[in-house]
Each structure stands twice: as C-alpha cells, then as structure tokens.
Length: 193
Image (cartoon, rainbow, N blue to C red; front, side, top):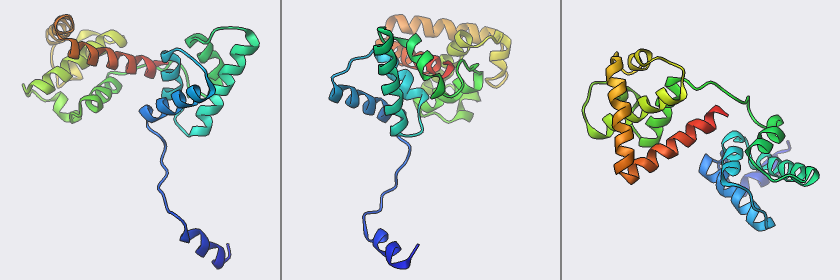
C-alpha cells in the first residue's frame, strides 16, 4: 500500500475486534430476532450460539438459513430442524464428551484452577466443583466409576458414588446449587451436539 493510504488508515480509531463470546453471541441472535420480529425456542438460540463461534456474519447467515428452511418446509423451528439445517455451519456434530472436557467446563464455570480439582483439598468450593464434575462425568460419559475416580487424583469408585449422591441431595434442597448444576448440564449437552 502507498504510505499516504497507510497514514490515513492509522489516523482513524484503532479497535481490537475479537470473536464474540457465548453470551454475546446469544445476545446478538436475540437482538436480531427482536429487530426482525421473530421468535424461536431458547434451546435453538443456544445451539446456534454455541456451535457458530467464528463471527457475526455466520451467526446471521445461520439464522437466515434456518428461517428460510422453516418457511419453505412450513415447519416449526425446533432443535432437530436446527441441527439438520445448520449441518454445514456447525463444527462436527455429536462429539463424544470426555471427563477432561467436563472437568475444564466446571473449572471455567466456578473459576477453579484445574489442578485444584485433582488435589485432596477439602475447601468447600473445590469439593463442590469436584462432586459436580464427577456427577456430570457419570451422566455424560461411558466411563466406569473407577475410571472417573482415577481422573480425580486416584480416588476410588466409592468416592464417585458418594459425590453423585451428594449432588442429587443438594439439588433437592438448594435452589442455587440446582440452577448451577442444570446450567452446567446444558453446557455439556450443547458441547455434545
């Protein structure tokens, strides 16, 4: 480029544009739908936002494709239609979830260091994160209780059983805890799609 053009480009506002995070992508889709007077199930919006993470144009393109298919086929928009239509947009569908994936998700969610999850510490926030991770690993993976325990610093299967039972009990009595677990379950399910 000519130096005079570079000089003019540099004169303008410089902004660091990054890929929007998950919550921002949901907000973008919801605003686009509101502006266009559209409605769609929340699970479909979450599916699109989770799986299309490159840029806003692709999000809008996916939304338009979904709406077009819904209109042409005279079919309600649901998760099955979204999966079918967005096959071209979405990174490989039906991924197998690993214990490590769940561990990282829970660590990110609770802002707990990954290595703390594997240690024998008895700090409440780490113990709860560990128990939830074991509960989700049992629910979403095909690993044995022994294998799950081994992924948590060599704990045995009885610890995994106790953790799962503790999570179930707390979900029945503590609404905030229950909401956290349900939100994490939803994140794991979205990751598996």
